[in-house]
Image (cartoon, rainbow over all chains, first blue to last red; front, side, top):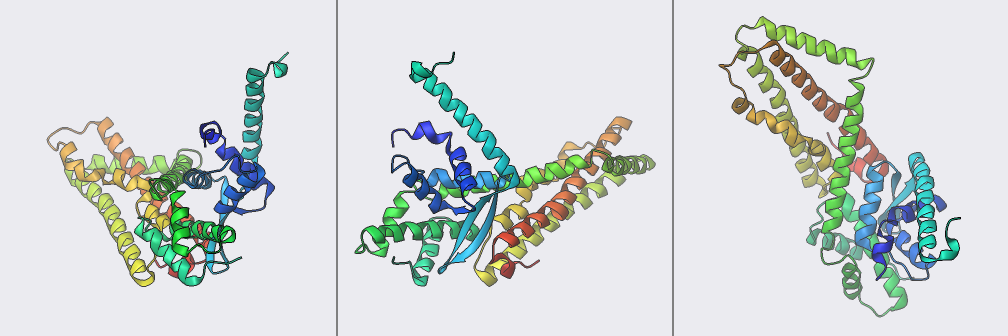
Length: 112
Length: 234
């Protein structure tokens, strides 16, 4: 996908935001949710998703729970208390970035 | 919706192993992901065979397949281990634990001063400390091998614990001690103090890694993973 570099840095924020809105999610579910919300415009590749999830888990921002679903095991991720705080800060950071980009590409949004 | 059956799930585990994922905790997540992708494809095209759907799904992982995922997860876990060790170690340089640290350095320093030929103190001390690390590493290796033989499962988490998050390579520095040390040289008071401090620091690292961080992470995994408890043998 052509715009992949644009959202590469936002992947962590996307994951945190989705987990903030859902009690717990598993890897495949996250990829599908992003596809659904953006009507297929954006997809998270498997090679990018799992390293990000594992990094967030190692940093203590995500908790993990492995449950038996049907005939297999499924690894669910959920936000820790620290993860919830980090989501707020990451979202504010992203919103600020979007605001600046808007000001750059559209003069109507330029700061007074 | 058609679901992947038990035999197909086993095929997926074998598939991950064939693609260099030897760790059960990593395989489990990948197997679920592949199974979900295959089932999704079946929903759109029910005539697709399992093998065709698997091939399509694996392509999504790119040219390096699962390798990057395993590599990055290993790095993330090692970092997590080291962060835990640093967090605990810092406490030994703050009140009240700093009293224990300084007292230990002082005891070693005073003991060392009792020996006219410092080699009689330094060599046994270095041997004891490093033998313990080798003994631990060997014990962990045997335990992991035994568990693998009994269950057919290897855990990445366990491997990181066994390697002390990569610290084991730093601990092996003891092998080079005879090359570094020069027994003919005089031990100044500063050198004796530095040696005592380094031994205490080293012992603290080992103590924290083996007695605090490794058990804590094992406990975390046993809470997260239902199958870990069954295979967890000390």
